[in-house]
Amino acid sequence: MYVATTVFTPLEYGCVGLSEEEAESRHPSIQDSIEVYHAFYKLLEFTVAERCQHVVCERDGGQRILGLHFTSSNAGEVTQGFAMGFQCGATLTHLTETVVIHPTCAEELTKVNVSKRSGLDATVTGC
Image (cartoon, rainbow, N blue to C red; front, side, top):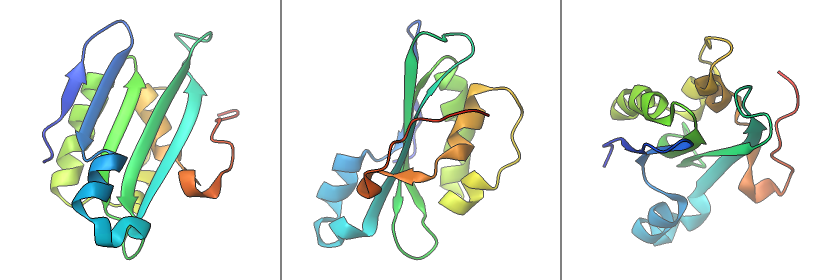
């Protein structure tokens, strides 16, 4: 389940774990127990284009991460790095409390704090 996958194109896509839809279909009795955190941001290298990321995690308890999806340059390396954390039971708290190497695109994953369910704007503003 935690095999990292990447599409190597000029704008890379990487994922590990379940998508939101897969998490809901595998666990229909706990559909309300899944939370998706997401953000839209602009990379320094591509200031014209927006990038997207989202983290699928359990809503209750320790908020164990079920999946991570990332569209950006270097998505392959970023996804590979986070895949090991999922093997070890990484949670949203582990992710958001990670000390980042600035500026890198992986840093953006540590700043997810808007859930899809909230309906709030997920556009990242500033550093």
